[in-house]
Image 1 (cartoon, rainbow, N blue to C red):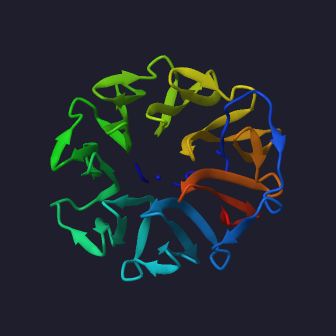
Image 2: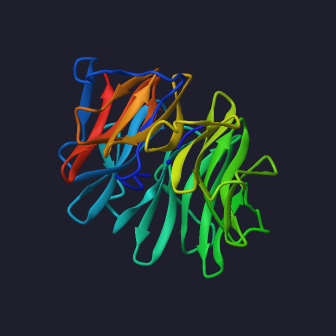
Image 3: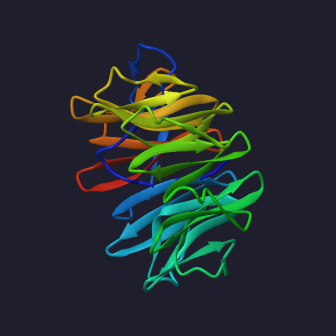
Length: 285
């Protein structure tokens, strides 16, 4: 499973498998900062075991993969689209008002003017198409979830597709034909962790992680964007206006002004961190 967006600095990530945590200086623990030549990093992903990220310099956004820039021929790239599709780099290039899928350097002609969020599910391509009637999901060439008006954030969970859907003003997760999280005010960021569904949920103004049906991270002011890192649950938190990563019961990234969006790249912890208006990638050596 590969893939996902630097949606906001105000929402951040962490790993928790227990109740107590220990503070760890990520510089001491052997991390390296990547992409500092850019103004901002929006999204990171594992593509064929190598780091890929969307970076911005000035008004131009490009994909950086294995140290090389991609997408310079476009006006920009969609900030929420970056994935591994069958071992190939996949993203969405922007040309004027059109957004096209690019996989392995080739544009995918699917007949739509605005396609984004590519993801591989059980070896098949899924993506979101934006039209006047809403955001629709296509999987293996067929539109699915037609009963929902708005669909976003598709991903793979245990070989099956999961996504956020909206119906009658309510957001929830659809996974394996079942709806999850309707008891919450809102949900987002579905992910697979050890073959089980995890996602962010909000109830009565508080955001936390739901993993295998259990609510996690409620001891923090805010927690969410779960992911799997080396077989462990990772997610981001905010506490006392400070955001950081918790992984294997240890806190990472607290030496930065903020740290968010943990991912696993080649079995190593990687996240976005920043100081002031500038951010970059922090990864284990």
